[in-house]
Image 1: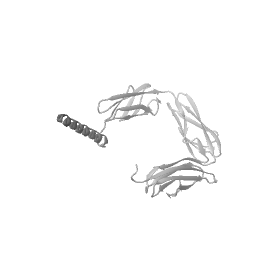
Image 2: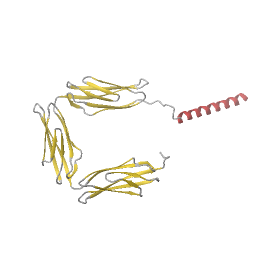
Image 3: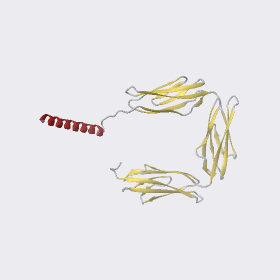
Image 4: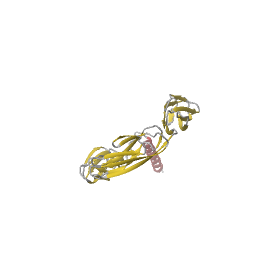
Length: 289
């Protein structure tokens, strides 16, 4: 009977010790846990390119002690861990692979294909904005590749400054504007694209950002308004009241007690047209996460 009691006590002590050790292990922030190898797909800046043009490839992976081993069946690769730059002086379909190996010798291979061609490629026209204010220059870019290509721009009004694949457009009256671009290579092959811009005489308030939008009391948050218009003025207001330091499109927010604050920015152009945006900032005590 005594042996059974002693054995039971020893078993209880051992179980308790193991449980305590497990708790300490799980709660100890210095205990290193083993990460599983996870590899996403390869992303590329382009999938069809001309001779000697470059393509940036990126691979996002998680794990311990990762090695990135890139390879391609044609062309050249300049690699820097998870990033590679591909170029080729010959046409064809390039098969590009990356073998990711962790410190436990687990590995995953991801691949992608890039087509290298001498054909004229005109992928499109893009502008910084398609809704534009009056008298405000908007950058436009034509994305095309080929041998000795020439860009021919035109608009329904002569309101453009042109430099090869890049142009700057300025609208002088409200309405829609059609931007045309024709690209011609040395063999005479041509492709054309269009872009439609809408011009307005009202101010355009693109965004209002608080950085950070959660801030410790007594510290600062940067408020940045991005807006377009003619002769804009900025008016800032906070509810409840707080300190707004500065003027213009970028100011600083600060307060010495915790609360949730709504910051309103109103923009007004020289004709008196106005619009506004709001953003919220959470002010916390110093010991909060």
